[in-house]
Image (cartoon, rainbow, N blue to C red):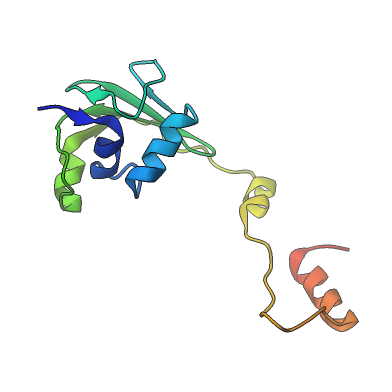
Amino acid sequence: MEVRLDKWLQVARLFKTRSQASRAIELNRVKVNGQSPKAHRSVQLEDRIEVEYRDWTRIVIVKGLRDKPVPKAEARTLIDDITPPRPKLSPLERVMRQPPSQREKGKGRPTKKERREIADWEGWE
């Protein structure tokens, strides 16, 4: 059975959509057996796939081939995850990853009092 890499990445739930998987492959964030593949490359059993995320790299071994979506429990059987533990973030990195504060649409510019409250809340001086 031949399965395209981008399809398999979605079925194995390493990416939510096939287009996200294709985009990651284009940006060289996915490696198969140490090489940068194309999205149409066929996946073989026992291939080693490395997927780079923002702060870590996930390493999996292909244990099953499917090209149609399967239940989550069955998707776990398609891979052998040999990823090392995710690195712990420093307090500064944790703060930097938080989304910026949001204002309701149409609220306008914050008042001086609101700016002070925002600064206190976000840790500014």
